[in-house]
Length: 73
Image 1 (cartoon, rainbow, N blue to C red):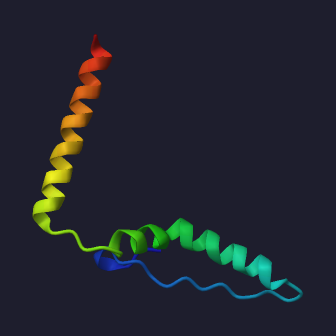
Image 2 (image 1 turned 90 degrees about the vertical axis):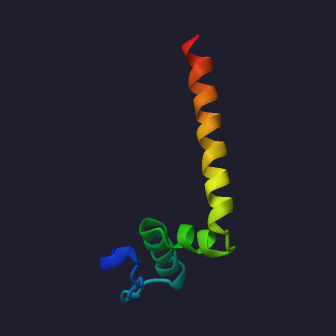
């Protein structure tokens, strides 16, 4: 459930008649996982300056390049 701008929307789960709360909670957790809400929360937990992001991205690219180079031989 993506809204314009890439932001995630709220997740709503209605408890059905004669449904245990645990079952509704399971459905809620599945919806959150499906919408990527927990992933987004973990991503926003710590602030990372742009310079650090670039450095990490560069290091990951170098690591991928080394891996592909090893696999070719």
